[in-house]
Length: 284
Image (tube, rainbow, N blue to C red; front, side, top):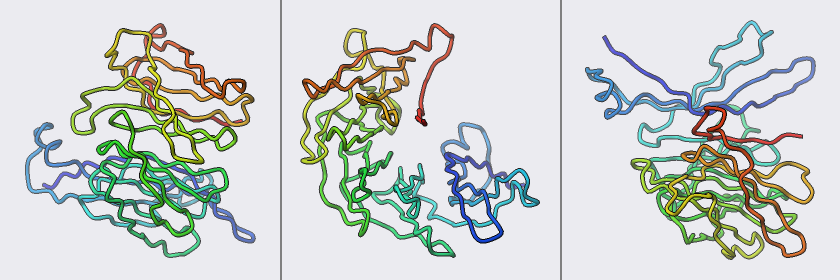
């Protein structure tokens, strides 16, 4: 008997509207368990590795609720990770943990097609953010210590920003103050060598300006800041940072007078008997 264990790693909702009919769809990537994971779970037998992107009907009032409408296969060694939409919601970017590439999907063309974009300077592609004018994308490369900068219109690589600290993961941009924040997380292969810093980059020049410790503990704290996000419409700008192993939430508050950030702990999940904070999003 063949056993296939599938993991859905991330979901992003998209809306498609046509006259007299509308749909609520979700796009997510999936993968079967790796050979190493199956061995650890003591599941034997010959099993074919599969990956893909599924588009699912998530409208609870739809007769097709929960059904897969489109299945887009991926090569079995890509290890697709996250899906990000540009500012217009017309292009989707799929990051890869296994290959030095990203896939781009033109959401205006149906059936959907995958365009492979090689990013040689990127190993273990994690997060993507877009400039406020939607002209530029930024990709964190957890395995190569870089941020790759690309053109949204052509998807050609503009430049590569080498970072002073390894394992970049989370990234946030605020063009209003000309700043990018990047977290230092963990080594991708085994979650080891956990970091403790956030690096500040000037968005207009791609120049690394400073690096800041995101922990009140003695170094190395190994708290692993993982995600960072600017709160929409906050004035002055404020970003929040999740410390994965530290179990805390930190705040980066912009200081207009000095054009720097003030970093401080905002919340301790440990006091609520909670831990491992990961994703964080803001909506106003």
